[in-house]
Image 1 (tube, each protein chain N blue to C red):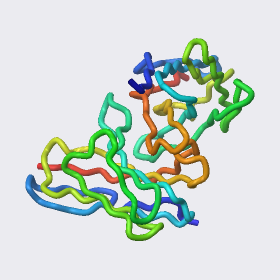
Image 2 (spheres, rainbow over the protein chains, first blue to last red):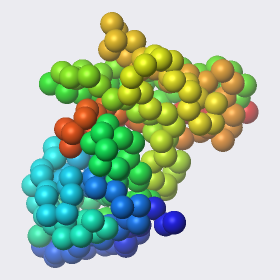
Image 3 (cartoon, rainbow over the protein chains, first blue to last red):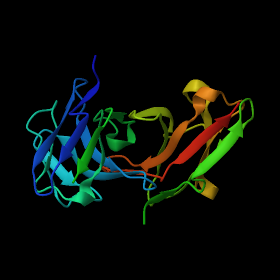
Image 4 (tube, one colour):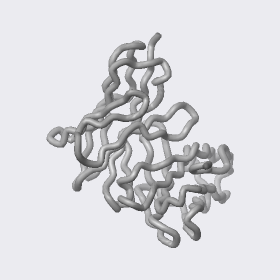
Length: 115
Length: 113
C-alpha cells in the first residue's frame, strides 16, 4: 500500500516554463488537495477536490490549475512558472466520510525551484 | 476569519523534560482539530485528532492534546521528550465538508541532550 505518491521529488524550472506535479493515491479516498509550504507560513491550500470531476479553489489558487478525471490522480499544473512559486508542494488525501474533518494523508512533497 | 495561531515559532527543551506546544484557533463552526509532525525533508504525519467527545485526546508517540472550547485552544503535550521528537509541529483546523484544512505557522522543536 503506497499511500500518497508525489512525483517528481525535486524540480528546477526557468521562469515562464510550465510543468505538472503528479499526485496519486491508492486508498480510494474521495478528497484530495494540494498545499504549498513556505518558511514561517505553514501550509496553504492551493486547490482541492471532493471527488472525480469536482475541484475548487483554496487559499492561494492563482497560477495553478487542477483537474480530477479519476479518483486516484490529482495533478497540479503550473501554467507559467514564476519565482514566487518556489516552494515545497504537498498533496494530501482523505476519506470522503466526514469530509475534511477526516485526517489527511500526505505525500512526501515536491521541492520546486523557479529560476 | 478562520485562522490558527501557534505563538511559539521555536522551542528548545532538554531531553526528558516535559513539553507543551500552544495552538489557538478561530473557527465559526464546530472545529475538527489536528496536530501533525514533520521531520526534515519528510511529509506530514498525523499525531492526533479531535472531533468530539472527551476533550483530552491521546495520540501516537506518547503525545496528548486537550481541547478547551472556552479558550479556543488545542495544546499539545508530552510528559518526557525524547531526542527523536525534534521536528516541526503543525496545528490545523477543519470542518465537515468545508473542503479546507487551515494550518498554523508551525513550531520547531529542538531537543537538547
